Length: 242
Image (spheres, rainbow, N blue to C red):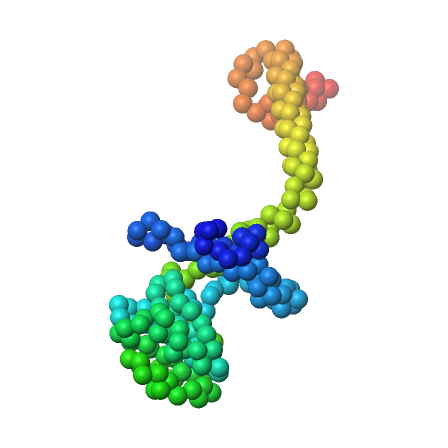
């Protein structure tokens, strides 16, 4: 794309759209300075937008022989294809239309919200006016289709990239902390294994002592209960002897 750009590509932001049936990708190109200008009011209020959509792609999808447009006071936005269009001041609309379709064969469907008083019937163009919206934003929101759109918040402007920039200064500390936790857990596990082995060894020693004291007890099910029972028997025999 560099050869097609009049400006230095380092000053431009590029955003890819979804893959098309012909294996191509639509690309939106905007000046980084303009991106910063759009995002500045949101950042000042601590807001992080999830998407930044060109208003051209919020217009109704085009059909063969038909374009979609949105009229605003002093400005018109036209969607000429799935991922193309233009915007201009109202006075320049006839010139832009003539350059885009010299044959004047394309029907122009213009959404005209309340408060727009331009007389589009003077265009001498196949025309359909669509009133009924209270303001331009309502028309854009109602007609936006994410699967036929393109989010400008990619690359350095994406939420993932913002998270990466916030995460990187803490990455080393997080890795060290994770390593410390892993070592601590390993130590506790090893200690628990050693304690279990010691307990098992002590239990085996107790069983051996018990069997040495009571050779007739060959089957050990509950050492504590059996020892208590034998102690009672011994105590009972001693009392009877007195």
